[in-house]
Image (cartoon, rainbow, N blue to C red; front, top):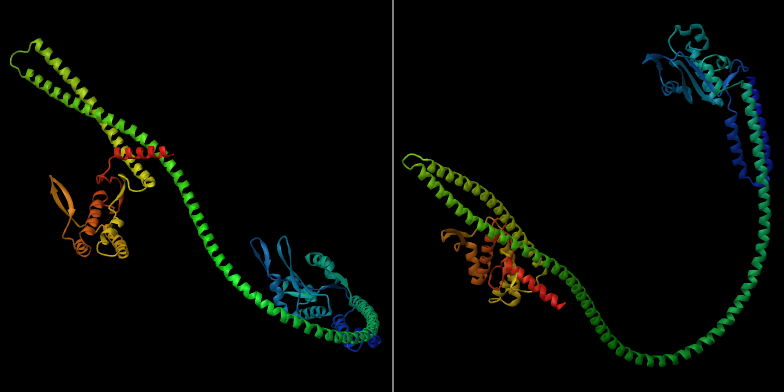
Length: 577
């Protein structure tokens, strides 16, 4: 009760001091600042001067910040050490006392079964700590109960930490000594009183600073008001002088405007006359510009076309030059390869004749030997010798025959290889002529099995106009090229010619009959010709393939003819350069 009386007097005295400061300052600052400052001070005093619950002995030394001690916390032996509930779990159990946190105490063996409950530093925290202690005492689990029962009673014991707990050896005393100080209730009250006095002094100092600032603002306001009055007076004088000057300027402007209007009227008539002349001249200039612009565009277009042509000609010249060089090398190479192949063929024919002659000699020797073996009479030494000579000669012929067979097979392999090389040369020559051949020459490349769009257009043009013929030819070319490529369509019949099977066009095919009836014999011939070509050159793939062609005689060109044509073209181009 005496603690409450002193607390009320201290708070009352502090409030009176602050109240007097606010009343002294209210006349200078104004009534609006007074309630606001007063509310702030009241809030600060409320935070500092909250009354704690009564305790039995005010001189007890408590651990501050306020802490509680929990002992006999349940633990169990697990994996070689003691384990118990976590701090958060214990905090949930003690949530009715509003602890800030609960710290379990551990040592090398694990959980010690002890914990520290931290409540805080203010009086609310102290009240919560006392409620925590009273709860455990009322349940028979207070500090005195723990000393009486020790470990002979299950359940947690709890109390507020004091000086004896801090001095007690062990993890509890170590933690309290490290994290708290010993203070009495009076120590805490005195410290709060010092904080209150310091707060009051700080507030008084702030109020004095604000009062001086308000006085400075009032002086500035008075000076500004006087200055504004003088400025307004000067403004009125300037406004009157300005209005008089404006009136004079308006009169001068009206006279000047009338004179300008008269002059403008005169100038307008002169301007209209000149505008008519300018319009006429402008039309003439526009016509000249249009003609010049058209000429300029035509000239630029012609220059662009010439530039493109020049560029293409240069590129074509370079390509032609490279192609000429490659073709010349190819021609020389194939000429040499062809000569080697011919020599091999001649040698092969000679070897074949020699082989046939040797076979005949062997058969003659065999016959003689058989005759001598079956001759009647006794065999004399001369006959036996002759038989041995014939046998030896026959064995030599057999050996020579084997060597010739081996040589024949070797030459045959080389001949096949030469033939493959000639076919490869023919293919390369086809590829080269496809890139450099221009215009229609006697020797060139023909795509066997491909419809000739130009010939189709000429054939259709015999019955249709030029425009309709071109369109119809394009449609027919697209349709029949697609049909020719279909492997399921095979409009052929097999006949025997000179003892060999040969495939000819079947005249009973419905598609071809319809084509002949609708477009005539010439279109029919072009389509059937393409069918025969693709059936001869690519019956399985059914697509057009390139081939060296003698256009003059209408047949497949030989490799010699193609090479002679390329050499002729190369020499002609070389002389032109």
